[in-house]
Image 1 (spheres, rainbow, N blue to C red):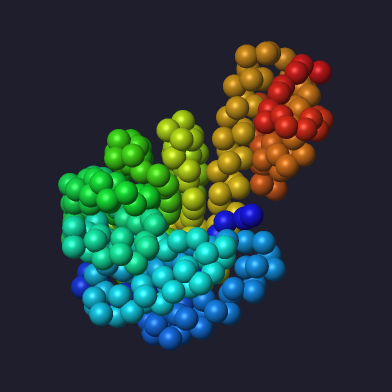
Image 2: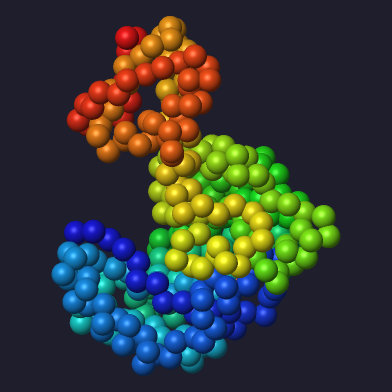
Length: 331
Ligand code: SF4
């Protein structure tokens, strides 16, 4: 059975901050927070959809700072969600939320436990205090460490989210953030390259010529390093880049967004592996054996890997081999 998240956006509700990159209205596409009744309607409508697609979902309160919203409203949402988990355990297998690291304490974790919350994701964004401060996050790296330890101590699944290319960010800071996530024993990670949205502080800085995010190429290389690192640490990266459906393209003025970003990054990793093997074997013409599902990763998005290798005088043919990631032979 396939697993998914049924996302319910709680936009900007209860958030007193103005992070440099955030404009919730553009990302969630709606300003109004759903009532508990509307939440029930969404959940009820999705039961048969999920059943017909043989899928199970976690009910995901995403978008803002779930543990910072009005307590009564939050508990009513949680009550509605927990009813559906109880009534349709084969359809709704848990509840998750995203929140800020400085909005976690014992009291709120007790409450989340009571309603059957399974996973908590923290928008850490960076583990570098200079970057956090420059982007007006209003919390420190130590807040992320404390909240993460508490979440783990209460037995929740811990998700940590990071951004790349924020104001004053450096690629080495991003790698350091990933290493800290691993040290905190994150169960999942999300990587969001910065998208500069209209009306944000980042956009103002960009207009004044004081800031630009990492380039597309820098981001692809960095995200490839991050994915390889998290894979080595056995931390699943459950999202790379914003969803295309989040309406960012109309509102973005800079930064990195591509609907196929994850595939592009994975094919960059494949390019690295192919280059390493062809250099080791030596020669100019090769046969690459790979499973059918990996062919587009080998050739690269719009043939970019093939072109990059051809520029180095390397040519290859592909032969499918079921279950093989990559095997290279000289032709
Ligand atoms: S804390 Fe979250 S919702 Fe609030 S401004 Fe920052 S990113 Fe936006």
